[in-house]
Length: 337
Length: 56
Image 1: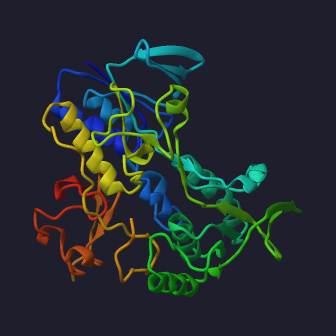
Image 2: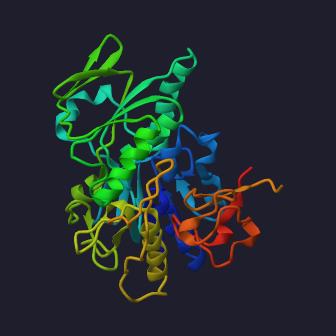
Protein backbone atom coordinates (compact mmCIF):
# COMPACT_ATOMS: atom_id res chain seq x y z
CA UNK A 1 0.00 0.00 0.00
CA UNK A 2 1.17 3.51 -0.83
CA UNK A 3 0.54 6.11 1.88
CA UNK A 4 1.02 9.74 0.91
CA UNK A 5 1.10 12.52 3.49
CA UNK A 6 0.96 16.22 2.65
CA UNK A 7 2.58 18.39 5.32
CA UNK A 8 5.61 18.02 7.58
CA UNK A 9 4.37 19.58 10.81
CA UNK A 10 3.74 17.63 13.98
CA UNK A 11 0.64 16.01 12.44
CA UNK A 12 2.30 14.67 9.28
CA UNK A 13 5.59 13.68 10.89
CA UNK A 14 4.07 12.01 13.98
CA UNK A 15 1.73 10.05 11.75
CA UNK A 16 4.51 8.99 9.36
CA UNK A 17 6.81 7.78 12.13
CA UNK A 18 4.10 5.90 14.00
CA UNK A 19 2.69 4.29 10.88
CA UNK A 20 6.22 3.29 9.82
CA UNK A 21 6.65 1.38 13.08
CA UNK A 22 3.30 -0.35 12.78
CA UNK A 23 3.36 -1.23 9.09
CA UNK A 24 6.91 -1.99 7.95
CA UNK A 25 5.87 -3.08 4.44
CA UNK A 26 3.81 -0.15 3.23
CA UNK A 27 5.41 2.66 1.30
CA UNK A 28 5.22 6.08 2.97
CA UNK A 29 5.87 9.33 1.14
CA UNK A 30 5.73 12.68 2.86
CA UNK A 31 5.42 15.72 0.62
CA UNK A 32 6.19 19.15 2.02
CA UNK A 33 6.89 22.68 0.89
CA UNK A 34 9.31 23.10 3.81
CA UNK A 35 13.05 22.68 3.20
CA UNK A 36 14.64 23.01 6.63
CA UNK A 37 13.47 19.79 8.23
CA UNK A 38 10.89 19.07 10.89
CA UNK A 39 10.85 22.01 13.28
CA UNK A 40 9.05 23.06 16.43
CA UNK A 41 6.21 25.42 15.66
CA UNK A 42 5.70 26.45 19.33
CA UNK A 43 9.32 27.62 19.49
CA UNK A 44 8.67 30.22 16.78
CA UNK A 45 7.38 32.34 19.67
CA UNK A 46 10.81 32.19 21.32
CA UNK A 47 12.54 33.20 18.13
CA UNK A 48 14.13 36.39 19.50
CA UNK A 49 15.31 35.33 22.95
CA UNK A 50 16.48 31.79 22.53
CA UNK A 51 20.14 31.21 21.80
CA UNK A 52 20.87 29.59 18.45
CA UNK A 53 17.15 29.33 17.66
CA UNK A 54 17.60 28.65 13.95
CA UNK A 55 19.27 25.37 14.87
CA UNK A 56 17.54 24.54 18.14
CA UNK A 57 14.15 24.79 16.46
CA UNK A 58 14.97 21.98 13.99
CA UNK A 59 13.93 18.79 15.75
CA UNK A 60 14.66 16.40 12.93
CA UNK A 61 16.40 16.85 9.60
CA UNK A 62 14.45 15.25 6.74
CA UNK A 63 17.35 12.84 6.21
CA UNK A 64 16.62 11.33 9.58
CA UNK A 65 13.10 10.50 8.44
CA UNK A 66 14.55 9.05 5.24
CA UNK A 67 16.79 6.85 7.39
CA UNK A 68 13.61 5.41 8.89
CA UNK A 69 12.43 4.46 5.41
CA UNK A 70 10.04 7.38 4.95
CA UNK A 71 10.35 9.04 1.53
CA UNK A 72 10.45 12.81 1.91
CA UNK A 73 9.90 15.17 -1.00
CA UNK A 74 10.74 18.63 0.32
CA UNK A 75 10.49 22.08 -1.20
CA UNK A 76 7.58 20.75 -3.22
CA UNK A 77 4.17 22.23 -3.96
CA UNK A 78 1.14 20.02 -4.37
CA UNK A 79 -1.00 21.52 -7.10
CA UNK A 80 -3.97 19.15 -7.22
CA UNK A 81 -5.58 16.03 -5.83
CA UNK A 82 -6.96 13.79 -8.54
CA UNK A 83 -9.47 11.59 -6.75
CA UNK A 84 -10.52 9.58 -9.82
CA UNK A 85 -7.12 7.99 -10.36
CA UNK A 86 -6.01 8.48 -6.75
CA UNK A 87 -2.98 10.65 -7.33
CA UNK A 88 -1.65 14.04 -6.36
CA UNK A 89 0.01 16.42 -8.79
CA UNK A 90 3.24 17.89 -7.52
CA UNK A 91 5.48 20.56 -8.90
CA UNK A 92 9.18 20.18 -8.13
CA UNK A 93 12.30 21.50 -9.86
CA UNK A 94 10.26 22.81 -12.77
CA UNK A 95 8.62 19.44 -13.37
CA UNK A 96 5.06 18.22 -12.92
CA UNK A 97 4.79 14.74 -11.48
CA UNK A 98 1.82 12.57 -10.52
CA UNK A 99 2.16 10.55 -7.35
CA UNK A 100 -0.20 7.66 -6.71
CA UNK A 101 -1.77 7.03 -3.31
CA UNK A 102 -3.89 4.33 -1.78
CA UNK A 103 -4.46 6.46 1.31
CA UNK A 104 -3.88 10.21 1.36
CA UNK A 105 -3.34 12.10 4.61
CA UNK A 106 -3.92 15.85 4.51
CA UNK A 107 -1.89 17.62 7.19
CA UNK A 108 -1.02 20.97 5.61
CA UNK A 109 -1.73 22.97 8.75
CA UNK A 110 -2.70 26.59 8.56
CA UNK A 111 -1.44 29.90 7.32
CA UNK A 112 -1.75 33.24 9.09
CA UNK A 113 -5.21 34.73 8.83
CA UNK A 114 -5.12 38.20 7.34
CA UNK A 115 -8.32 40.18 7.92
CA UNK A 116 -9.69 41.43 4.56
CA UNK A 117 -9.11 45.15 5.29
CA UNK A 118 -5.36 44.45 5.75
CA UNK A 119 -4.90 42.47 2.54
CA UNK A 120 -4.09 45.44 0.28
CA UNK A 121 -1.11 46.23 2.55
CA UNK A 122 0.49 42.79 2.59
CA UNK A 123 3.87 44.16 1.53
CA UNK A 124 4.00 46.39 4.60
CA UNK A 125 3.76 43.79 7.35
CA UNK A 126 5.24 40.53 8.56
CA UNK A 127 3.54 37.41 9.84
CA UNK A 128 5.03 34.69 12.02
CA UNK A 129 3.69 31.37 10.93
CA UNK A 130 6.69 29.39 9.72
CA UNK A 131 10.43 29.09 10.12
CA UNK A 132 10.87 30.99 6.85
CA UNK A 133 8.83 33.85 8.37
CA UNK A 134 10.97 33.78 11.51
CA UNK A 135 14.20 33.92 9.52
CA UNK A 136 12.87 36.90 7.53
CA UNK A 137 11.92 38.70 10.75
CA UNK A 138 15.23 37.95 12.41
CA UNK A 139 17.14 39.23 9.41
CA UNK A 140 15.11 42.44 9.37
CA UNK A 141 15.74 42.90 13.08
CA UNK A 142 19.45 42.15 12.73
CA UNK A 143 19.73 45.09 10.32
CA UNK A 144 18.87 47.39 13.23
CA UNK A 145 21.04 45.60 15.77
CA UNK A 146 24.01 45.87 13.42
CA UNK A 147 23.66 49.64 13.61
CA UNK A 148 23.29 49.57 17.38
CA UNK A 149 19.61 50.38 17.10
CA UNK A 150 16.52 48.75 18.50
CA UNK A 151 13.57 48.46 16.14
CA UNK A 152 10.15 49.64 17.30
CA UNK A 153 7.40 47.14 16.57
CA UNK A 154 3.65 47.28 16.20
CA UNK A 155 1.93 43.97 16.71
CA UNK A 156 -1.65 43.87 15.56
CA UNK A 157 -3.64 41.19 17.36
CA UNK A 158 -3.61 40.33 21.06
CA UNK A 159 -4.47 36.66 20.75
CA UNK A 160 -2.14 33.83 21.70
CA UNK A 161 0.54 34.39 19.03
CA UNK A 162 0.42 38.18 19.24
CA UNK A 163 0.93 38.12 23.01
CA UNK A 164 3.71 35.54 22.78
CA UNK A 165 5.65 37.47 20.15
CA UNK A 166 5.11 40.82 21.89
CA UNK A 167 6.52 39.29 25.05
CA UNK A 168 9.51 37.74 23.31
CA UNK A 169 10.48 40.89 21.39
CA UNK A 170 10.13 43.03 24.52
CA UNK A 171 12.22 40.65 26.60
CA UNK A 172 14.78 40.65 23.77
CA UNK A 173 14.99 44.43 24.31
CA UNK A 174 12.88 45.94 21.52
CA UNK A 175 10.13 48.56 21.78
CA UNK A 176 6.78 46.89 21.33
CA UNK A 177 3.24 48.25 21.00
CA UNK A 178 0.42 45.70 20.94
CA UNK A 179 -2.88 46.69 19.29
CA UNK A 180 -5.88 44.57 20.18
CA UNK A 181 -9.42 44.90 18.83
CA UNK A 182 -11.40 43.96 21.93
CA UNK A 183 -11.37 45.09 25.55
CA UNK A 184 -9.08 42.35 26.89
CA UNK A 185 -6.20 40.16 25.71
CA UNK A 186 -6.68 36.54 24.60
CA UNK A 187 -10.38 36.85 25.37
CA UNK A 188 -11.18 33.58 23.63
CA UNK A 189 -8.88 31.44 25.77
CA UNK A 190 -8.69 33.27 29.09
CA UNK A 191 -11.14 34.34 31.80
CA UNK A 192 -11.06 38.09 32.27
CA UNK A 193 -9.02 37.92 35.48
CA UNK A 194 -6.24 36.10 33.60
CA UNK A 195 -6.48 38.58 30.70
CA UNK A 196 -5.82 41.36 33.21
CA UNK A 197 -2.87 39.50 34.67
CA UNK A 198 -1.47 38.85 31.19
CA UNK A 199 -1.76 42.53 30.37
CA UNK A 200 0.12 43.44 33.51
CA UNK A 201 2.90 40.91 32.81
CA UNK A 202 3.30 42.28 29.28
CA UNK A 203 3.31 45.88 30.48
CA UNK A 204 5.90 45.05 33.14
CA UNK A 205 8.14 43.65 30.42
CA UNK A 206 7.82 46.94 28.54
CA UNK A 207 5.03 46.23 26.05
CA UNK A 208 2.66 49.11 25.44
CA UNK A 209 -0.80 47.48 25.35
CA UNK A 210 -3.59 49.29 23.48
CA UNK A 211 -7.08 47.77 23.77
CA UNK A 212 -10.28 48.47 21.79
CA UNK A 213 -8.24 49.46 18.77
CA UNK A 214 -9.88 49.48 15.37
CA UNK A 215 -6.90 49.38 13.02
CA UNK A 216 -8.09 50.69 9.67
CA UNK A 217 -5.02 51.21 7.56
CA UNK A 218 -1.26 50.81 7.27
CA UNK A 219 0.79 53.52 5.60
CA UNK A 220 4.40 53.54 4.47
CA UNK A 221 6.21 56.81 5.11
CA UNK A 222 9.93 57.59 4.94
CA UNK A 223 11.04 54.05 5.69
CA UNK A 224 8.60 53.74 8.57
CA UNK A 225 5.24 52.04 8.70
CA UNK A 226 2.26 53.75 10.30
CA UNK A 227 -0.66 52.10 11.99
CA UNK A 228 -3.83 54.09 11.66
CA UNK A 229 -6.58 53.88 14.28
CA UNK A 230 -8.24 57.09 15.56
CA UNK A 231 -4.65 58.20 15.81
CA UNK A 232 -1.63 57.48 13.64
CA UNK A 233 1.59 56.08 15.06
CA UNK A 234 4.79 55.05 13.32
CA UNK A 235 7.03 52.01 13.73
CA UNK A 236 9.98 50.28 12.13
CA UNK A 237 8.33 46.90 11.85
CA UNK A 238 4.77 45.71 11.72
CA UNK A 239 3.51 42.24 12.52
CA UNK A 240 -0.04 41.02 11.96
CA UNK A 241 -1.14 38.20 14.28
CA UNK A 242 -4.87 37.81 13.83
CA UNK A 243 -5.29 34.06 14.06
CA UNK A 244 -4.91 31.18 11.65
CA UNK A 245 -6.60 29.94 8.53
CA UNK A 246 -6.58 26.21 7.77
CA UNK A 247 -5.17 25.43 4.33
CA UNK A 248 -8.31 23.99 2.77
CA UNK A 249 -7.71 25.14 -0.83
CA UNK A 250 -6.46 21.83 -2.24
CA UNK A 251 -9.27 19.87 -0.62
CA UNK A 252 -11.86 22.36 -1.82
CA UNK A 253 -10.61 22.22 -5.41
CA UNK A 254 -10.80 18.44 -5.24
CA UNK A 255 -14.43 18.67 -4.21
CA UNK A 256 -14.01 17.46 -0.63
CA UNK A 257 -16.45 18.82 1.92
CA UNK A 258 -15.01 21.80 3.72
CA UNK A 259 -16.18 24.34 6.24
CA UNK A 260 -13.71 26.31 8.28
CA UNK A 261 -11.47 23.27 7.89
CA UNK A 262 -11.65 20.04 5.91
CA UNK A 263 -14.65 18.17 7.26
CA UNK A 264 -13.87 14.80 8.78
CA UNK A 265 -15.88 12.20 10.65
CA UNK A 266 -14.96 10.84 14.08
CA UNK A 267 -12.40 8.62 12.35
CA UNK A 268 -10.69 11.63 10.75
CA UNK A 269 -11.89 10.52 7.32
CA UNK A 270 -12.94 13.19 4.82
CA UNK A 271 -15.90 12.92 2.46
CA UNK A 272 -13.61 10.73 0.27
CA UNK A 273 -13.03 7.37 1.92
CA UNK A 274 -9.37 7.19 0.83
CA UNK A 275 -8.50 10.63 2.20
CA UNK A 276 -7.99 11.59 5.83
CA UNK A 277 -7.21 14.93 7.45
CA UNK A 278 -5.24 15.70 10.61
CA UNK A 279 -4.28 18.66 12.75
CA UNK A 280 -5.10 22.31 12.10
CA UNK A 281 -6.91 21.51 8.83
CA UNK A 282 -9.31 18.90 10.22
CA UNK A 283 -12.79 20.04 11.23
CA UNK A 284 -14.54 17.48 13.42
CA UNK A 285 -18.32 16.84 13.17
CA UNK A 286 -18.96 19.18 16.13
CA UNK A 287 -17.25 22.00 14.20
CA UNK A 288 -14.11 21.94 16.33
CA UNK A 289 -10.58 22.32 15.00
CA UNK A 290 -7.64 21.35 17.17
CA UNK A 291 -4.69 23.70 16.81
CA UNK A 292 -2.62 22.73 19.86
CA UNK A 293 0.23 20.25 19.74
CA UNK A 294 -1.07 17.68 22.22
CA UNK A 295 -4.42 16.87 20.57
CA UNK A 296 -2.83 17.03 17.11
CA UNK A 297 -0.17 14.51 18.02
CA UNK A 298 -2.87 12.40 19.63
CA UNK A 299 -4.85 12.46 16.35
CA UNK A 300 -1.75 11.49 14.37
CA UNK A 301 -0.87 8.52 16.58
CA UNK A 302 -4.51 7.43 16.69
CA UNK A 303 -4.85 7.54 12.90
CA UNK A 304 -1.66 5.53 12.40
CA UNK A 305 -3.01 2.85 14.73
CA UNK A 306 -6.44 2.99 13.12
CA UNK A 307 -5.09 2.58 9.58
CA UNK A 308 -2.77 -0.20 10.76
CA UNK A 309 -5.85 -2.02 12.04
CA UNK A 310 -5.05 -1.60 15.73
CA UNK A 311 -7.93 0.72 16.63
CA UNK A 312 -11.59 0.50 15.76
CA UNK A 313 -13.20 3.09 17.99
CA UNK A 314 -13.62 6.77 17.20
CA UNK A 315 -10.93 9.34 17.89
CA UNK A 316 -11.70 11.19 21.10
CA UNK A 317 -9.99 14.43 22.04
CA UNK A 318 -7.62 13.98 25.01
CA UNK A 319 -7.61 16.31 27.99
CA UNK A 320 -4.97 19.00 27.56
CA UNK A 321 -3.92 22.29 29.12
CA UNK A 322 -2.40 24.67 26.63
CA UNK A 323 -0.22 27.48 27.88
CA UNK A 324 0.77 30.75 26.27
CA UNK A 325 4.55 31.21 26.01
CA UNK A 326 4.54 34.68 27.52
CA UNK A 327 7.61 35.29 29.67
CA UNK A 328 6.57 35.34 33.33
CA UNK A 329 2.87 34.61 32.78
CA UNK A 330 0.99 31.78 34.47
CA UNK A 331 -2.79 31.76 34.10
CA UNK A 332 -4.69 31.04 37.31
CA UNK A 333 -7.52 29.26 35.47
CA UNK A 334 -7.58 26.61 32.74
CA UNK A 335 -7.70 27.87 29.16
CA UNK A 336 -10.89 27.64 27.19
CA UNK A 337 -10.07 25.34 24.24
CA UNK B 1 26.44 23.30 43.38
CA UNK B 2 24.90 21.30 40.55
CA UNK B 3 24.98 22.89 37.13
CA UNK B 4 21.40 22.85 35.84
CA UNK B 5 20.86 21.21 32.48
CA UNK B 6 18.22 21.61 29.80
CA UNK B 7 16.52 18.82 27.90
CA UNK B 8 14.50 19.23 24.70
CA UNK B 9 11.52 17.17 23.58
CA UNK B 10 12.30 15.81 20.12
CA UNK B 11 8.62 15.79 19.20
CA UNK B 12 7.54 19.37 19.90
CA UNK B 13 10.62 21.27 21.01
CA UNK B 14 9.49 21.78 24.63
CA UNK B 15 12.44 22.52 26.87
CA UNK B 16 12.71 21.13 30.36
CA UNK B 17 15.03 23.29 32.42
CA UNK B 18 16.14 21.68 35.66
CA UNK B 19 16.34 25.10 37.32
CA UNK B 20 12.68 25.84 36.56
CA UNK B 21 11.22 22.35 36.88
CA UNK B 22 7.65 22.00 35.64
CA UNK B 23 5.36 23.00 38.51
CA UNK B 24 2.19 22.41 36.42
CA UNK B 25 2.96 18.70 36.24
CA UNK B 26 4.19 18.53 39.83
CA UNK B 27 7.92 18.79 39.13
CA UNK B 28 9.48 21.25 41.56
CA UNK B 29 12.12 23.77 40.45
CA UNK B 30 15.58 22.29 40.79
CA UNK B 31 14.47 18.72 40.02
CA UNK B 32 17.22 16.89 38.16
CA UNK B 33 16.29 15.09 34.97
CA UNK B 34 17.14 11.69 36.41
CA UNK B 35 14.81 12.34 39.36
CA UNK B 36 11.75 12.86 37.18
CA UNK B 37 9.55 9.73 37.15
CA UNK B 38 9.74 7.60 34.00
CA UNK B 39 6.01 7.96 33.38
CA UNK B 40 6.25 11.77 33.23
CA UNK B 41 5.24 13.11 29.85
CA UNK B 42 5.99 16.23 27.87
CA UNK B 43 3.50 18.85 29.11
CA UNK B 44 3.19 20.31 25.63
CA UNK B 45 2.74 17.29 23.35
CA UNK B 46 2.40 14.25 25.60
CA UNK B 47 5.55 12.52 24.33
CA UNK B 48 7.32 10.10 26.69
CA UNK B 49 10.30 11.14 28.80
CA UNK B 50 12.53 9.07 26.51
CA UNK B 51 11.75 11.46 23.64
CA UNK B 52 13.90 14.15 25.32
CA UNK B 53 17.52 14.87 24.47
CA UNK B 54 20.10 16.81 26.40
CA UNK B 55 20.40 20.30 24.97
CA UNK B 56 24.04 21.13 24.44
